[in-house]
Amino acid sequence: MKGRAGDDKGWLDPEERWTYGNYEPENIRAVEPALLSVGHCLLYELDGMIVAIPQYDKLDEIIDKEMVLNEEKRIIFEDYYA
Image 1 (cartoon, helix red, strand yellow):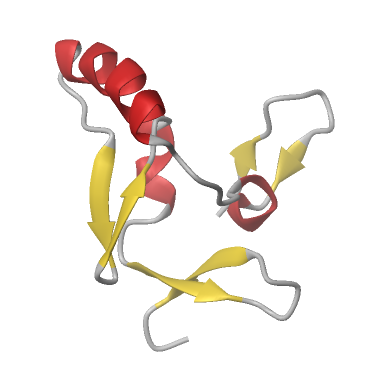
Image 2 (cartoon, rainbow, N blue to C red; image 1 turned 90 degrees about the vertical axis):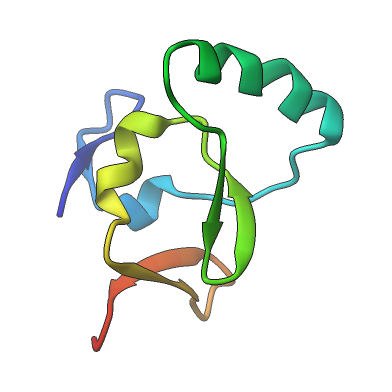
């Protein structure tokens, strides 16, 4: 599965785009109302963890995937039973 990166580097695999970091409560309070106003969520439960995903248009890349921390300590999404 490929997706367009936010820059002009071309097409990248989703694992090249997905990163992780902290969302402070202030960030959630600032971003969540805007997303809810257009019918989208900010917070999701993935593998028992609550995560903030503001790029709702990218969610289809991780449906039916499992979050895995690879050797480089990057989150990747693998097919179940991979």
